[in-house]
Image 1 (cartoon, helix red, strand yellow):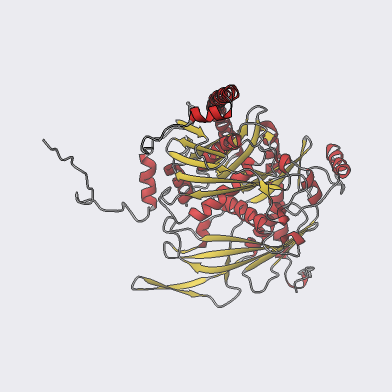
Image 2: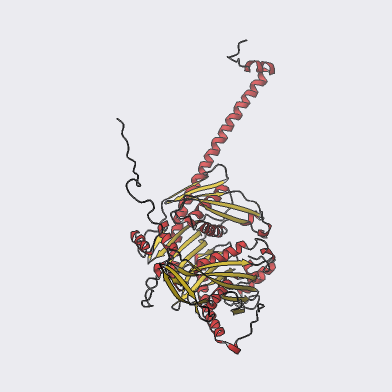
Length: 296
Length: 329
């Protein structure tokens, strides 16, 4: 993690703020910082999204490729995550400095997306056992302001929503060999359903309290946090992966509280994200908002 | 009379070499049927038969070997040394690096090995960070190496247990003993300490059958939960050091599995405690014996010096010259 040096006094200040449910930036323990989300920014990618969560800036691009499915799961497509910690984010990432963090994020995402109930890999299937889509989800960390797990998963989900797979119009069977004809029309495409796609929620323990969306300073104060991946299915929240991080331990009951908090926050985030994505989708033509990002 | 013992050669007997190049969903079904199903609520919450031994290698300070059923793991802890990468420097904490390696013969499928090594290494580091007093060696790094000799499931939990013993053996100060175990759920069956076969069902087929019910039929068809959970705990103050979960679980199932693993951890703790106490006793006995031997040596020397003083130097040398039997004067 990007490292921020804090003195004991600053740490105590943050701790007291958390205890009184009034954090440094005026949030309560269950609040997120303001978010900015834009989709379809990168013209060369099939889907893209940029998320800015206060100081954390994430850009996700999704590229598609046709691949052969794994023989064990003939009707599943493939996902591949790649996280790049750019040296702009913090000087620590220069050289191979960010590789540990990048690997941690990739592992967390892979773990969360592993179950076919979390991400329906069958929608990426073209011809079972022969051809499937492979999505390369490339995540670029432009700025590091705490709570990377949440930001990355939100951006990845938005980018998946934005992904347009060209429609495969016909396939000719030629002596058992398949030929795919891919539509040239950029508007003739299929979309992915993202209802069950998981979001990661980091629940941070500071003092005796649990909170969500820690800033970089709060992350330093926290001895332990638990990353919960929440997937919504039929209106119920499910866990599709979780692990503890930060180098501390917690009691079983505390862990349950953290889990409950994470699940309820994850549920809210999911509905909110779905709503925002729908809104952005609907604003087409002259009503389409100007992109405020730096890319364009 | 000589008797020739018959050696069984399956190849000559007409069997094929490999059973199958890869398993198909149908094989997965067969594999599942061949398993002994423990049912929804397991009654016996106990670890597998366990063998732990500390200090198996003489070349390193801290080493431990553990057999957990058929899973065999060797852990090595070297004393902390100075940080090599300045960027990894933390203000007030030492750094732990864990490296997990599979022996070439440890597992059948070699393809996923590098990926699993990476994953296990990262998870092992996370699990061990809470237990080691990292404030004691700031600006130092502690390298922990784990060699997996045989993989029959529960790799992560066995590695954690083994490293816990190796840490104590190396004399690294720890807050508590750490123990870990895992449980998984697949098609409503709870497998405690899942074997490689059971884990493979979950991982390789990725609970593919979880979807079978929800295929095209009614959307209300019961959802097939599946998932694996590995918990590491320090039981003096009932702290959970790491809880790693994958798959798809409802919160209630998650807590249920968590409690199962915590119970198993408690009984494992007894075993590890016994092993470590035995090890300390053994070490103590060795120390005592060594001390006695050196005392004996001291006494012998003292006697010689005493004789030297009594006899005077020349006399003493004369009496102590032994004639070489092969050289005639």
